[in-house]
Image (cartoon, rainbow, N blue to C red):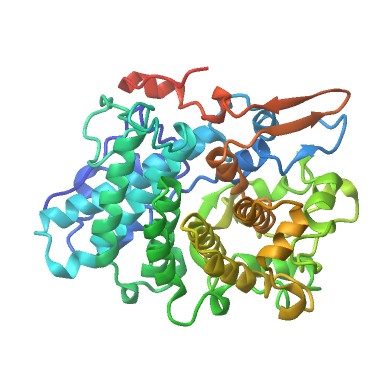
Length: 483
């Protein structure tokens, strides 16, 4: 059996935690990857260890200058001003770039081992997971480091390297391709990989691409690609015959009036049915999201959670924080692993819900809207509201076209429904960075306040909406994004 060795070049920037130990291992002493179990062990690393929540949230309109005169960490301040962050610290774009390509390298290593073993049917579950995991990492990269998919310009917009083999030289030359070519490769991996996945091979499904998680990813991909029939197809597979309600997070009863610790712990549990995919990330965002100078302010809280919403009911989300500077909805349960039992030095991790049932519901509702099916769009939104409105009563709180139009003061029913979807998505994923992708998709203008200075605005055509690729990647022949 062939021993698989990955040579890490400057392109991948793999200076992540744990990499040194791997590279210090003598190649001839490494274990042969010659069984399904060993390939599955490789695939544990096929999920990005970086966290995009911090920098995506800080760039969005979910934050404002909340603690005047405070001096924030550079990592948690530059994104607020849409400035390039050059550090490779946790929670930076460069760290996330590196973690995605590290995950891709693990997927490719698994796929090469499967090929060496003859692509036998007993390896199909591992092959399916590897392909879908590779698609996920590339989709996240192209969404952040390239212009967001636009069918009118995707053929010419710079993509990101779609890597399908392990690196075997120190510095390998790559081509960024186009956004369209990257999307074509993602679709190929998804459509080939999803049918091969078998949930029964996983001990804890929430940490892997189960069939539901893979279908959820497909619903996101096709929403970004604007192929709404496919969104409905894949999202409906997640809903199944029982519908979404049984697998949504229940804020209405399960998470209301609970202690901070309970809510933050339960949010990212593998047993929470809403969490279709959880990823272990190296991140200290839990220490900053509630007390960073640029964060979730009283103004944002009032606009999103205190004012009326189209349902007419009060939302069940509990906002915690004794002071206005520390308002938050608890979502993060930090895991600190000491490197030495006698010291306070260690590694910090967060389990992040990378794919949830709520996102899939919103994806399908939006797709129904674009297909002109307001009835099913409203049905999905009302399912969501049934678990988000306190003391929910269908007759009082369900949305209708007339009620929704009246709330926004418009006769444009489609426009009002789209605004409702985006507004509820924004509330649901507060602190998680998901709002940034809607800002990109719909070219939403973002205004940030700056204490004692004029507010700053990110226009729809601002080049800073596309994150800068790492400088070191130019050694592999990649052009930087325009600035």
